[in-house]
Image (cartoon, rainbow, N blue to C red; front, side, top):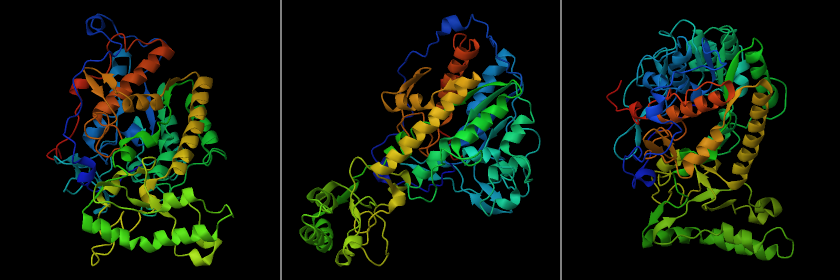
Length: 506
C-alpha cells in the first residue's frame, strides 16, 4: 500500500522521546566467535540469479515513500549481500533518483516526499521530488520487482506498468518506472524473463491492508479468496508460485502479518480528547437531544427486541472535564433506528469509541480540527463524529483477521507443496508487539518511533526492521536448503543499519 500521511499532532507523539531501541543483548542464534571461523555454504540452494517480486515490503518502501537509501536497505538487497557470500550474483534495483522520495509525472507531483522526525513527530520533507516518470526512468533488467501498492492480482496484470494508465489509476507509477511506461509485461513476466535460480515472493499484504488503512469503509475491498487467477487470491497465488517454480527455481515465500497490530493502528488512543469544564458542559448540552431521543426510542420499542438497554448505553454520548475523553465515531453495526421508525430518523448510528476500536494513524492530525472554521464547536471527533474511514471497529477487524488467516493458509500450502522456504512474518510481528525481538545488540519492538523496527509511516519496517526480516528469512532458507548463513554469522549487521534518515539526506 502507498501510504499518504501529512503530519501527526502531539496526541500521538507528545509523550515519546526519540529512542530507536535499547542496547540489551538478546540471543540471535549466532555466536560471533564461532561465526568468524565458519565458511558460508549455500547448501543445496543456487543463489546465482536472485529475483524478488512483491509489493512495497519487497521494494524497500519506508517513511511513507520510496527513496534510494531506503531501497538500498530493502529486504532483497540485504539478502543479496549475504547470498554473494555463497555464490550469489549481482542484484540490481530500480533506484529512485533521490532520497527525497515521491514522484513527478511531467513535472506534476503525484506522490509525496518521505517523512522525517522533527523532534515531536513525523513530518513531510519540504522538497520537490526529482524522480519524474515522464523524463528520467531507469533502464535495464531489475532483480528487485517490488511494486509499492501492488496486490496479488496486480502481479499478473500485463498493463500494470503502462504510463498512460497512471493518471487513471489503472497502472502503477512505480512499475511504470521499471517498464519505462510500456504495456504488455506483468511483474511476473519480467521475473520469469530473468530465469531466476532463486526467488523471493512476498505478496498479499495489500490484499487486506488497503481495506484496513481506509478504515474498512469499503472503498478498498479485501481481495476475494475465490475466483480465477487475477481475481481470487487462491488461484492467483498458486499461479504465481507455479510459474516461478516451473523452471526448477528455488525460493522463499512470506505470509501476511496481522496488519491491525502495526503502529498505524495502535498509536492513536481511543480517548485522546481533553476538555475543560465549560466545553464539556457545552458538548453534553449539544448531545442532550440525541441522548433523550435514544431513551424515547427505547420506550417506544420496548418488548420488540429491536433496541436494548445495553445498546442505548453504548450509544449514549457523555463528556467530562479533564483528560481521557473518547472520540465519537460512526458505527454501521448499530441499529438503524430511522429504518425501523421514521420518527427516529434524526438518531444517527454513533457512539463513543472504546479500547476495542482502532483509530488509524492519520486520525491524530484530524481529531480536534473544525469541520466548520466559523463554528468553534464543530470539533471533529467530538461534536462531529469520525466517519468510517478513520476507525476500524471490531467487526471490521474480524473481517481482516478472517481474510488474513485464509490467505496465510494458501501461502503456507503453496510453499509446502513446492518445497519452498517459508518466512512467518505474522509470527515475527507478534513477537515484536509482545516483548520485542533481539537483533544483534538491540531489542526491536513494534512501537512507532521508539521501537526501532518500523519506519515513520507506521506500516513499513525501517532499515533495521528490514534487516531483522532478512535475518529471519535466512534462518528459514537454512532450514529448507541446508545453507548455514545463521551459523556462519552471514546476516545483516544491525548496528550499521540506520534507524532514521535526516532531512538533509536528499
